Length: 341
Image (cartoon, rainbow, N blue to C red; front, side, top):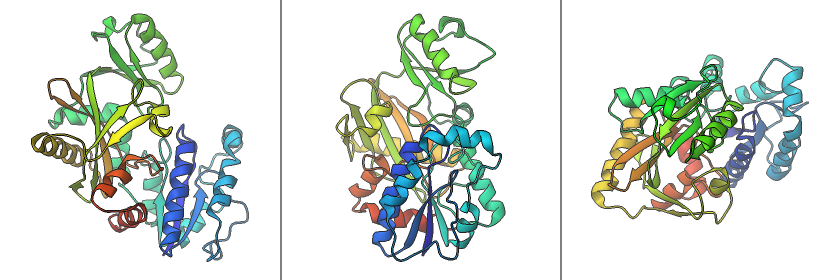
């Protein structure tokens, strides 16, 4: 198959996306596919769709080319109005499918999915509606509440509200302050004092104009992948220090991840059933990954859904696939197979 692995972009998760895309492209190449790596935003000058899918291809060289734009993203954004980079749409049209290795805004939020639907371009993952619903955690929380998916209590605050304290919002400390549409735990703060709360709100609003102040669940973190309507083995996530933030997600050795999680059969089934309910509630398709907290009394809370889960060497969905005998290349092909629409 001729496959474009679309990565990069403009979100705070650009670097993670490049790693995901590189690994996916290498895996698909190892299976004989004519896969190429392409930055959705920066594209490539002179790229010709009819000659792009070559037998000989240096994935690492292309990844380095994409990274060369990292310091210029804001400058490029200021100079042009169109999001898609040079040659991107033409090459995606020429491909058999596009593997979306994008994370965050303008990648995971439904806008690219909607554009591809209109252009007749086949891609991996959920469609535009489910992607948009899951991206905005304020909408996710409302839908979970209305459909019986257990989630932490929380309130939505906007930049114009300027909350002065957690107490003003009726929230007890400690609590969690997080951006509505962020990813990879960028813009997530666990606060224990009103001073920390004020700082977290200030920092959160530097990313977005909408935040969630949420009940802090003291306990253990888990995640559950769903592929083609089937819940996969659960991963137990135990950071060595702090919580599962950006550093602990992507720095090797920072977190102990156990798959399958050491849970009873009853709790395993319950969490997987909630994952499937969350998946259906958000109108997700093909695959996704739901994140959970379990409190000290065994209460289960669904935090959010990831519609394009990470595909880096330390990512969680590949660990779940491995637990059922599926290696990384198998998983990449499986995600393409279940995404045909």
